[in-house]
Image 1: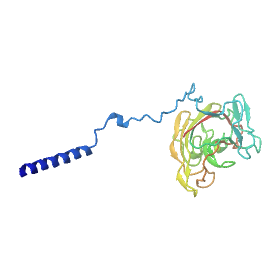
Image 2 (image 1 turned 180 degrees about the vertical axis):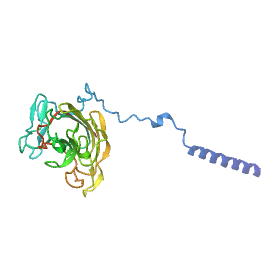
Image 3 (image 1 turned 90 degrees about the vertical axis):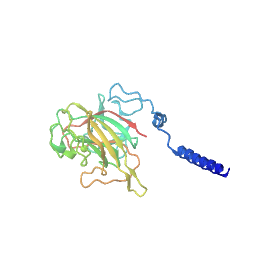
Image 4 (image 1 turned 30 degrees about the vertical axis):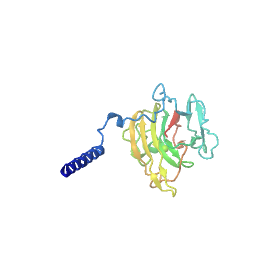
Length: 263
Ligand code: MG
């Protein structure tokens, strides 16, 4: 009898160990395990072309007025000329750069620009303007995506059209001739800062120039400076700024500017 009992106990113990081992075995993977249903991406209606603003874009310039823009110097109304659906950099001394009234963090931006047909000059003095992806002060403070006539115009390659000024050489030169409209499509990831002003995560930028990728998730080293090494300055959100460089023979024009904030 005692032997039977022991046998039964041994069997029961083995059975329970086996059962608990089998309970610990991970279940076989199922296709549902890797399928998520939340959050649902918002519905966005695309524009009629890739250049037209989609349904959730903030239109910064639709050819009618500069209501979304102010002087970068003193925040007074922007004084660039608007005619025939186009804004043109002012040649009037002192008018200077303009920037958006709104401030942004991470975004997708579309902007079109044109070098005048009768442009003259060379190097950096030939159709120089710029899109500051974050304006951190008046004048040229911030992060500049260069605008320049680089169709047939030699300059330092980290300062040609499509460059992140003095930081990133464009991966290609898809410039059109002066007189033709060109486009930038930008994905900007703003830098993040710690409370003490040190960099938590750097800025990144991807740029399509006339549909060609010229910057591919480039990690910025700081603000784009004319003289000296790039350095970061703490900010949270910032306007987008257009440059009145002032040293070209004929002014640069812009049109069709819109932005989609990324959250
Ligand atoms: Mg410039």
